[in-house]
Amino acid sequence: MTFIIGAPCVDVMDRSCLQECPVDCIYEGERKLYINPAECIDCGACEPACPVEAIASERDKDEDFEPFVADAVEFFQTVLPGREQPIGSPGGARTIGPVAADSSYVRAMPTTGSTP
Image (cartoon, rainbow, N blue to C red; front, side, top):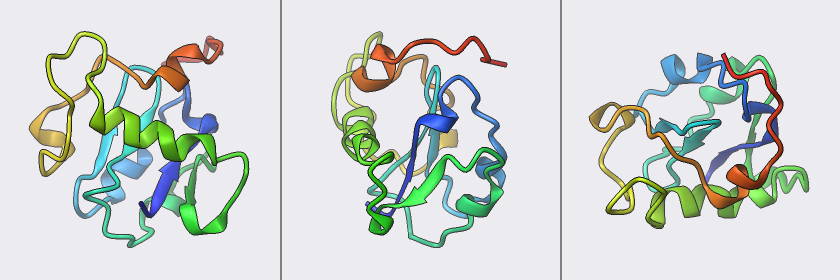
C-alpha cells in the first residue's frame, strides 16, 4: 500500500483527490473515500489535492493513520454490507461507481453530521 485516506475524510469526502488520481484508484464509500492499495502507483498526486489533509503516505508511519491501513484492505478484500462480493481490484473506481458501504472501522465511527 502506498497512500491512505484517514479520519479527516469521514463524513466530508471533498473529492478533490479524485480528479488528480491518474489511475482512478480512489473509490467512494458511503462516508469516506478509499485508495485501492493494489491499484495505487504511489505518484502522490492525491495528497496535496486534499483540502482537509486526509491523505498520507503509509511510509510516514503517522499513528493517526495507522488504523486506516487495515481499513483500506478490508474495504477492498471483504464483502461489504449490501454487496455479494468483495470489490477487489476492478481496474478503476469509475467501473463500479460509488459504493453504498464502508469498512467496519468507519461504520463504527461516530457521525460528524457534515456529510454533503
